[in-house]
Image (cartoon, rainbow, N blue to C red; front, side, top):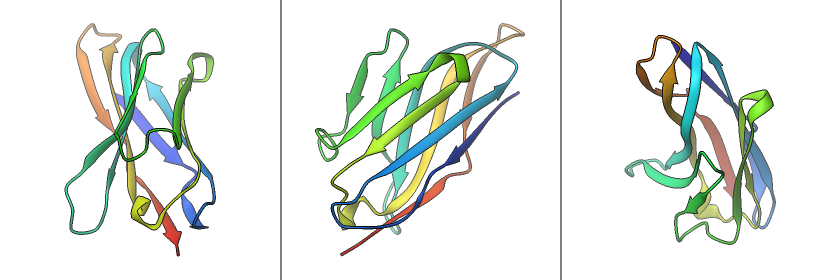
Length: 120
């Protein structure tokens, strides 16, 4: 099994910054991609950013230029640096990873989520 643990959420004012972390552990052979999703109250979960092997990254239009996704392979950790935060960024942020486990089976794991609240 592969476990993901997010941290770094909290309450911040408009235009503030936060850095989320997602640490992966367990029977990991390789990770193909890690994504940050977010879900605001009453809305569907949406993709915010994704980073793939080779460090290619893609962002939702709503966060492009403000959020940066990065990874530290030695620490099995992916970060989401969020700058110039807006009230509409308020959501629970979830980490998702897909890859291959040591038993050579694919995995698709989710973290428990971390709350980000941006006050106006």
